[in-house]
Image (tube, rainbow, N blue to C red; front, side, top):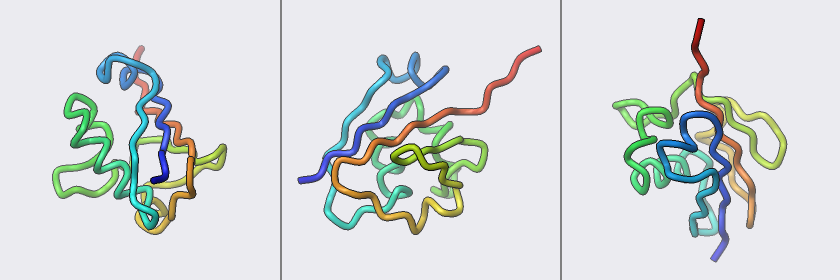
Length: 94
């Protein structure tokens, strides 16, 4: 079974209790489906990943195997075996 490794940055790291989360996925999983699984597994980070209607948050910066992927593309982006996904939530401050 393929494994996806998520590298969590900024406040996601603190909320998830670590910087890396691995998930076993089905062969035909999209990035959006994997993010929804991660949100279910780690409810504390769910608000940063998906919206109330289940779509991917547009403010989340996503890179799959070092390639930037938009929230819109996430619905159709098939994940390869052993992909690495980096997630960076919006950063605010003054």
